[in-house]
Image (cartoon, rainbow, N blue to C red; front, side, top):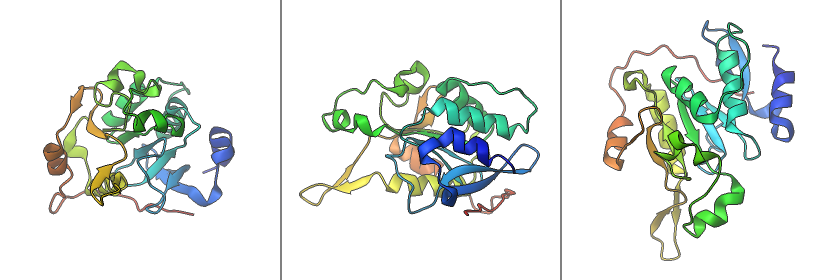
Length: 214
């Protein structure tokens, strides 16, 4: 698990040793990433990879999704492939194929535009991503929905709860228009479909490794 120096270079000023999480490669061997626990998860974060164990791997506000996604893919394949930096949508589709959930958040500098209900021209201008997000939050589920674990469902609920706020009249509102779907298939699910997808599966048999937060 000697990849701390790589993480320091990848995260720069956002590197925090207290936010290290242990994740596992294709062979089941552990390596470190920078994560978020329940108290710090937010739809206003730059983005996340959500593992089958329900672990949040964070993409920070100043980072490109491409860099973190590509590094995670490289580490996940345990050195079996040379490092390559993928475009965001391409990497997200690869991660979805592997059973990971991908969340594209929004950069803080775009919040004023969102508050004005303006279209945001940012990293989500990739055609594949825009089909289900159009510049706001985008949660892309695995291609094979049977691979979705209950821990991932819980993690998604935890993330989506942070999208709620009260207006001046005490009514419920949302920070972002978070769209749930699948990037590769160009799907976006209704709220009813999303609720059904995120309903726990009884007696689901999934081998998961416990998230370790140091």
